[in-house]
Image 1 (cartoon, rainbow, N blue to C red):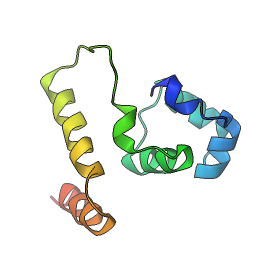
Image 2: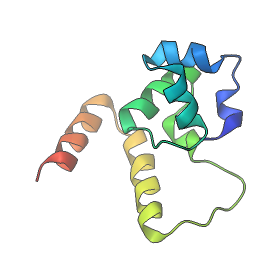
Image 3: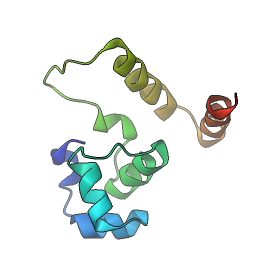
Length: 96
């Protein structure tokens, strides 16, 4: 997660409380030691008053494989959906 996004005048503790997780867990997400769920990303984005896609915007090119590119692109597309469409999409993703 980009540090610049998290620096909106809120401490890690304030963000963690706002999204309902432990500060240590939020710290691990922010430092990249733990991969957050889509639900957690949405809560963090809401607390920071940004869109989820902003977590993936970066001026510096990053080296990612095609699987990672697919995940990032899918998250960008999900971010553009309304809540009903997001819920329907998530249901489709978890059905066997």
